[in-house]
Image 1 (tube, rainbow, N blue to C red):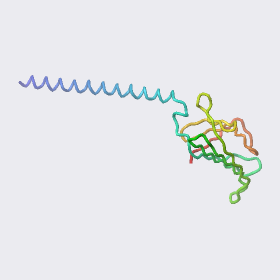
Image 2 (image 1 turned 60 degrees about the horizontal axis):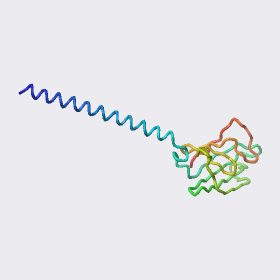
Image 3 (image 1 turned 120 degrees about the vertical axis):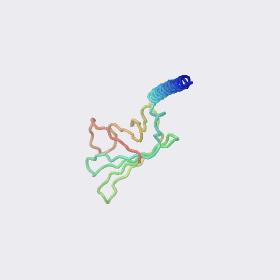
Image 4 (image 1 turned 45 degrees about the vertical axis):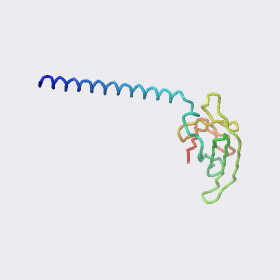
Length: 146
């Protein structure tokens, strides 16, 4: 009788072990599938890109250019550029509104011929076309979600 019980315990142990191993393999395969699906998605599909972003750009004749960009779900945008004279006084302020578009492969947001690469809570703006900015083609200016 003891041999029979021992055999049953061993059988149940091995069965449980095999079951757990097969479940772990399914989870790994599922994770790999979801990772590859995620990588295949365009930034437009991956990220919640709507919201408010901000960056301070260097300026040739002012303290800095504070840029605030708002992207809305209806593909409209509003960009405000504040040419900051000093810490306590706002300088010249330029505001622009319009509709933004996506590039062909949905990897870039385009507004008024300026391109932004989209990632999680960040827009990378290469060579912004803003009056009075110090041009440096090696820099990438990053707007962060606020």
